[in-house]
Each structure stands twice: as C-alpha cells, then as structure tokens.
Image 1: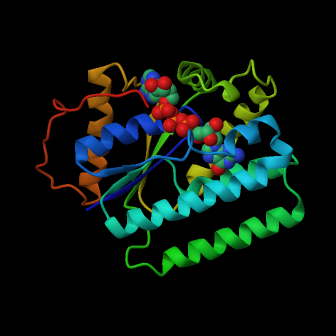
Image 2: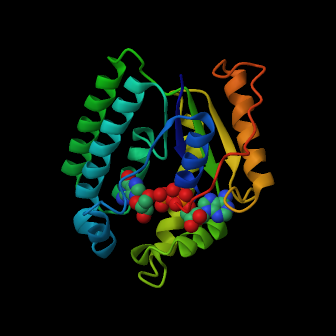
Length: 230
Ligand SMILES: Nc1ncnc2c1ncn2[C@@H]1O[C@H](COP(=O)(O)OP(=O)(O)OP(=O)(O)O)[C@@H](O)[C@H]1O
Ligand SMILES: Nc1nc(=O)c2ncn([C@H]3C[C@H](O)[C@@H](CO)O3)c2[nH]1
C-alpha cells in the first residue's frame, strides 16, 4: 500500500501524471480543487485581496486530501499540503499578505501538521517532483488554456511564474517527509509519447522498488493505460 504525492510548478504535468500513475498502480487519484474552486478566479483578478483566502481554501482541501490518503494508504495526490507554504510564502514575500495573515496562516498550518503526526500513517511514501523550465511551463499553461493563467490576461504573471520556479529548488531540497525523486518534465512528453510515458513510469517503479514499496520482480507493462486530457 502506497501514498505518492506529486509536486511541481503550475502546468508541470502533475494532474496528468497523477492519472497515469493511479491507473498503472491501481490506486485512487486525488486532484487539486481547480475548476470547482470559487476563489481561484477571484485571486487572479485581485491577488492582493484574495491571496490569504485562496490559501486557506487550498490548505483546507489539502489537509482533507492528505488525511484521507494516509487513512486509505492507496493513493496518488496531484499536489499536497507539503507544498502549500511555498505558494503562500511567495505571495507574502511580494506583499500580498499582512503580518497578521502570515502569522495566522503558519499557526493553522502547524496545527494541521501536528494532527498528521498523530495519525497511524504519518507521511507519504514517496514524493515525485516534476521539474520544468519557464518555457515548458508557459507552453503547458497555454495548451491547457485557463483564461486567468495566461500572460495575455495579466502580463505581470511572467514575473509571478518565474519567481514561483525559483522557490521550488530550495523547497525540494528541504523536503524530508518521505523519499523523493525528480522527473524531467521538459524531456518527457508523457501525454503523447508512449515511450516517454514508459520511461517515466519505469523511473518511478525503480524508486518504489528501491524503497520497498513494490516487489523487486514487479514487471507490469503499460499496455492498458489510456491517457485522458487533465
Ligand atoms: N509531460 C508532458 N508533455 C506534454 N504535455 C504535457 C505534459 N504534462 C502535461 N502536459 C499538458 O500540459 C497541460 C498542463 O498539465 P497538467 O494539468 O497535468 O499540469 P499540472 O501540473 O497539474 O498543473 P496545475 O499546477 O496548474 O494544476 C495539459 O494540457 C497537459 O495535457
Ligand atoms: N496562490 C496559490 N496558492 C496555492 O497554494 C495554489 N495552488 C495552486 N494554485 C493555483 C496555480 C494554478 O493557477 C492553479 C492550479 O494549480 O491553482 C495556487 N495558488
């Protein structure tokens, strides 16, 4: 039984890889609340006003998801509570949260993390991080086509996205809730190329074997996995 959490910048391919992995491992996928998120469009329209509210919204849904995932012990999460502070800290650093909001946020986050430490299974088994360059990130954001994420909607998003990418390297290095690995999201097109999809799954399978989460003689193929647009 395995809990895998994915991480990576906007458009890196987390939802897509979550779907592929969940089918391959026959586990339940948990997706981030995006299209049903009432605060997200408000945030992109007025980030100064809505940064704190959006973060509380995401934090709450991520807390629920990781709790359920750790209880089920058979899940893949497309982004998780471990990445939540990265986003909020970055927004706070560019002046989108008051000191009181920052303090309240960290108290809430620390309380939630302390709750998780009291669970029988406390941590995920593996973090799979998808690393992408700015160019890939923008291409994928354009491909997916959410209006409020486009540079044409708000040209200052270029700085926001570049800054977000800079926050990921130290975040990944510091992450220590589970074993971790990185997938090269620039190199592998696991949506349209079967060979790339296989290469990525093989890397994850190898890691799962290394940490004792798959038997060493596991050799399931990818034949039956159909890809749907995230
Ligand atoms: N490795 C890949 N190669 C080519 N296209 C990809 C790849 N991964 C994702 N895509 C495409 O890029 C777009 C964004 O992917 P996806 O929604 O999976 O990203 P995400 O990391 O979940 O984004 P977000 O953080 O915004 O939720 C989709 O249109 C998807 O089909
Ligand atoms: N401010 C902020 N905090 C978060 O924790 C967070 N998580 C995701 N997002 C935004 C990025 C994509 O547009 C979209 C889908 O990932 O939602 C966030 N925005």
